[in-house]
Every structure is written in C-alpha cells, then in structure tokens.
Length: 319
Image (cartoon, rainbow, N blue to C red; front, side, top):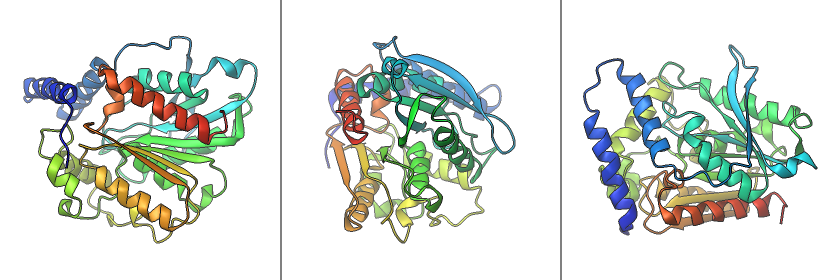
C-alpha cells in the first residue's frame, strides 16, 4: 500500500503527543477540541512566504446570520479582474476556521494568481446537515453575484475544499443549480463517501488506525455529528460519490496522499467522472498523510502547494 515518508511519520508523532497531552479536558470538550485542532494546524503550517497577499475579513449575508469569510487578494487584482476560488476548510464539518488555513491560502493565491474566498461555514454538531452546505451555497452565490466588487472575473469561478470541505465543494459542483457556473473544482483529500463500510476502501483499513493522523473513529464521529443520525448516508448531498450521474460536473483536479484513509474513494470518484467523460486529473502523493498541504513545516509540502497552484493556474486560464 505504501509507507509514510520519514518526515510525515515524525510529524504524526508530534501531533499524537499533543493529542495525548490533551486527553482530559477541563471545560467543554468540543470547544477545547476545536482549540486543539487549531493549535495543531497553526503550529505546523510553516513559514509565511507570501505576505504581499492582502486579506480582508467580511461577513456574507446568510439565511439566519452572517457567514464570516476572508478574501485573499492577489496583487494582480489591483489592475484586472482575476479568477476567484471559493474555499471550504476541512475538520470533519465540526472543527477548523479561517485562521487555520491562512498560510496555506496565501501560498495558493500567490502562486496561482487567483483571489480566494475562504468561508467559515456553520459547524456541526450545533449546526448539522444541511446548515454547513447551505452556507457554502450562499457563499458561492455571493462570489458569483458580487464578482465585480471583489475584482473577480465571474466567468472564472471555481470551488475548492479539503477533507470535509472537499465534500462541500464537490456537492456544490454537481448541484443542478450551479450547472454551467463553475469553471473547475479542486478537491484536496476529499471525504466523498460516508455511506459505505470502512472495509469498502482498503486505504481506510490500512491507514485509519491512528498511525497516519486521520482515524476511522474520527471519520465515524464526524459523520455522526454532521448527519445527526437523521439522514440517509447515501444521499449524494452527503456522499457525492453516490450521485446517479456526474455528467454535468466541471473539470476536476484531485490531490490526495498515498497514506490517507480517504485515498481510495478519491480514485473511485475520479473513475466515475472519467466514465462520464469529465476532464479529471488525480495526483496521489507518495508517502503523504491526510491534510498534508496544511503542514508547510514539511519541506516537500512547499512543492506540493506549488503543484496545486500550477494546476489552478492552468485550469483557470492564467498560464
């Protein structure tokens, strides 16, 4: 199946040490777990090489409340409208926030030449499905309708997300209401099928035992929190791999680690898209774990961020 590269293995040991130190929470467990997750992602996010990328925190009008979001403006947007990528963070629909992805998204904006709208959608379990998805759709519509004031090109809008955020991006990309509106989707180690037993995907068994960061237990907990136990897990708005048709999906780029429990469902999704004659490319990174792009402290990750950025650049007609 493949082994973790030594640097990733050392990083997982450090992360597990942090997790073990925080096994007993004094206060609200969910709040403390969110704080711990943010501590991990910010601690290992790597240097900020791209301080020329301007950020602006905004509030997008939502159904019940404003949706916090952050715009990453490439310097080129001062002279011309640029493509915009609407980004949804990972964290099992229950963890994560804007600050956790700040350095990663600066890197992608700078190297790809696009503006990025990062969305702080409502989290489970307080706001289970479909709340987060509704926020994601609202943010996408905002990007499309407000392109001019965001100095974005409305004909070059894409979605991107990692892990659970990749799930949201994928659901939006195959939604009929967004047909023809998206130039591409970029899925980073996405969670695409929560309906099948873990045994369906050998990568979940091989890499989900705790030695490779993401665990099967964490996947199960995320699904329970997000669905509230009240929804059919094969609903394509929850498991986009289960959609009966993918013929209207925009061109797709997927990046996943070889040592990620979610690896095999990424390949299954890519195969389905290919059978529907969708332009799809999947890059499987040797030795890499789940969420590796967030860990810029690893030297190789800088090159993978560049690889992603170049694919965005090419697919959004910037090269």
